[in-house]
Amino acid sequence: MIKKKTIMQYGELLFGALLFATAVNVFIEPCGLNTGSVIGLAQLLSYLLVKGNSLTGLFSFCMNVPLMLLAWRAISRKFLIKTIIAVTFQSFLLTVIPVPATPVMGDVLSNVLLAAILGGVGIGLGLLSSGSLGGLDILGVYFSKKYPSFSVAKLSYALNFLILGASAIVFDIQSALYSFMLIGIMYFVSDRVHYQNINMYAIIITHDPEVKKLILHKTGRGVTYWMGKGAFTETETEILLCVLNRYEVHAFRKMVAKQDPKAFILLSKGNPILGNFEKRLIV
Image 1 (cartoon, rainbow, N blue to C red):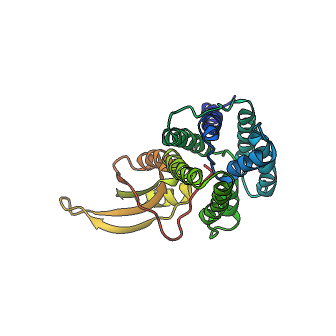
Image 2 (cartoon, helix red, strand yellow):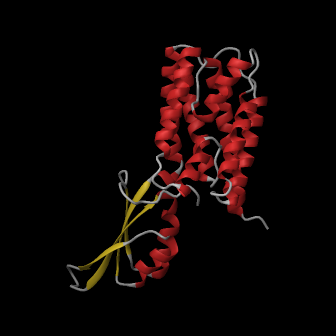
Image 3 (tube, rainbow, N blue to C red):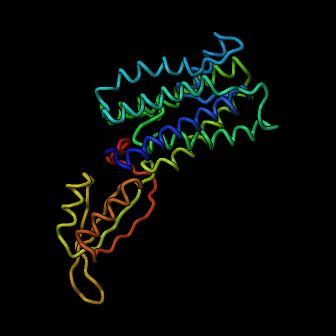
């Protein structure tokens, strides 16, 4: 029997692909803007090679195939299956959703904001479902597994810089600037949706010495602890410090509470973490 969580994940994945494809065809394409990444490259190829028709979906699918072949040994089977489904569905939608002849909204900025929100939520839902919508997300997972010190962000910046530079030549500088704004807002929104990108600090005060061992073994997260003393009771207690991502918080709280119902847990949204903190793209 298929688990409810699995059904929810596939629902999020397909809905995310629908939102992103809608943002591209309905709001981005009519304004002559570019989404960056692999889809953005597909947009440029479609415009240059096929006048009058949009083959962005077909080109993006073709470019995602070698990326998935490159990464299939480094990423989990579930992630790969979900990504194949999402890329195929998204490419189909990019092909069948009609592109309006003129922008839907009266001014470009309104189209940019709406497209960025829809596209950002779509990307975030794809990652939240333990899959992705393809493109640099695949490379991000691949390089995080193979080369932990490799900066996927730098790769993304370099590729988007080249694509937007080409967009400025093909269209105009104003379109490239709006595209830059679109990409920035879109990925900000996707980070808010994709909980794995939000770091949390957890401080646990407990009398049970097994709690820290449980966290180490069940989550794989590191724990720092020191001994404290209650001001009222004068009894010794352990103070544990752990950093995790927001997606892990619910299971983390349940696990600690089950081991020690009297444990005091303080959670706080953290600033960017420097050093050896593992960002888990696959849950």
